[in-house]
Image 1 (cartoon, rainbow over the protein chains, first blue to last red):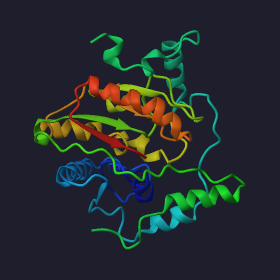
Image 2 (spheres, rainbow over the protein chains, first blue to last red; image 1 turned 30 degrees about the vertical axis):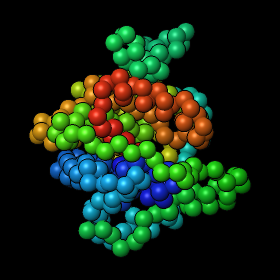
Image 3 (cartoon, rainbow over the protein chains, first blue to last red; image 1 turned 90 degrees about the horizontal axis):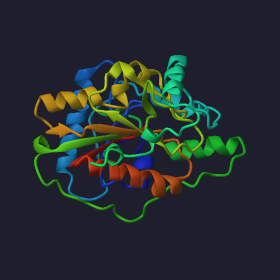
Image 4 (cartoon, one colour; image 1 turned 90 degrees about the vertical axis):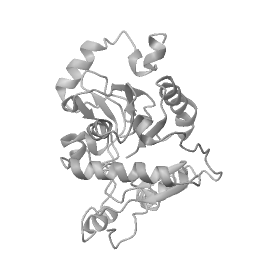
Length: 121
Length: 164
């Protein structure tokens, strides 16, 4: 999947289904399961039909009729936040749970190893 | 139907924005060679699909991603409760992903497609990371090989990559 056409053209994955939606909506709109289903079905169908490496199929969906979101996205400034190496929890409750599961004395090994490798499967 | 305006040129936009605040131009990855190619060996309805998503998705209880070239990944069981999913990312508006993680981590949708027989099955685990990693070398040499190993260990037939 992709929502940034110029980036995907530069990277060249084997097969791409491009959805021209705002970033953060690569597989659909929130709480619209029918649309999400249709997007994924079209993407999977397209991936089956592509025969050339590096192919990109543009999925036939429109975020909105007037493309107003693109004008805004182009004019907006850089929304990126300052970067540091502290975990950025969505909620404080998440932080509490994670710190209980991962005492500072231990590295979070589960995040660094494939599950089957951990269990020697 | 497609909209009237062309697709946004993110590379140029980001380059201009960073130049305005005095940063050197970022060296975007351009792959000039054709990628490897594997034709489908069997119908999608017989395939095991493995999901990899870069929107910084994690499960409550897991350590969240940080924003300074975090090359770690999270292992998420594919029977996860959608209400337990969270996001941590700096480069996109997470509002809708936090309302409905399926927009960047289509797990309900994939489970539905399995029930409907459109795809054969899902791997036992999905894998997520935070795609705002400036070092493409570390992605290539550290993260991508691990993710590949994980998917192969789960006997995947088709890898579905969902970037943001």
